[in-house]
Image (tube, rainbow, N blue to C red):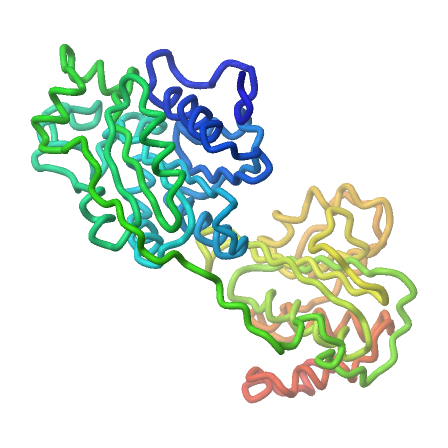
Length: 420
């Protein structure tokens, strides 16, 4: 009976070796009498990663190539070799995150990495990886790999892992997984597989065992030693990050009776994030709790830039808010980004640059020429001054203090920020 996997069918293609890895992981963990709540499964991007919902353990799904880094952090945070951290990763993810693998082995983190090596990127169409053997064909490399891939087992053994082995993903290899899971420190098992969707079709008549043999990828144990494992250094007599002794001293009084959710939307390079931080710090100087969530596209430097700020007389346990009380828009990029939010406002205030169209909204609208008054690059910062001057919820002097302590004050006259 399954203890670590649900009873639903595994989500892989028929004939995929990923199913065996999951099933024999179940068997190996049962062999060692682990409890599901003592096991953390960390998966990577790739076909193997869709197994998450099938495990009854703790599960974490990482970014492509970063699952080993996540597993290392989990291991260091647990600081308990009796808990079991297992990382599932494909040859594609291992290619991208190879440095994480080497570092984890070198540091001896308490974890086991299972590499699902089907010798190609199976989720994205069958591109070759750095583990693709010489001559192996893929849909995007029909002529076959021109050179041999990395021997990851040799690399990780040389890095200092406690246990490293390569197994053929055919038949029952739960004994080898049991051995790997039983080790303290870093262990790795590379499971050789064939992708039924791309590998078989691109290499008709190919036998996995023959391919592995011809590639010189030995099926054996590469390292089995008693290396010392990683132990997190516990630092005593360190101040808590939440120590009230380190709280920012209150210099001004505020008039806020409940949380204020403020959304600032502009364009990249126009000071949106800086302006949000100014408001954040002014609020803290006025005795308020504050959080900030910044948003911008991966292109960084072009397009929109938005920030969601929450100021509250009480403790805040989250960032961001889908229903802001105030939205301030200083550019077309910002308006395009915030349009749906503005449309859904049932009240509150919309501050918008007067050069922009007034969008559909039930909020109270106030238009002001932020960009015209102080120029494009300073419009977001100016809008924060404008808001505090008119709302009077926080003394504008608190914002002046924050501004004067910034590098911007050396380039920009504070008188401009106070000219309404």
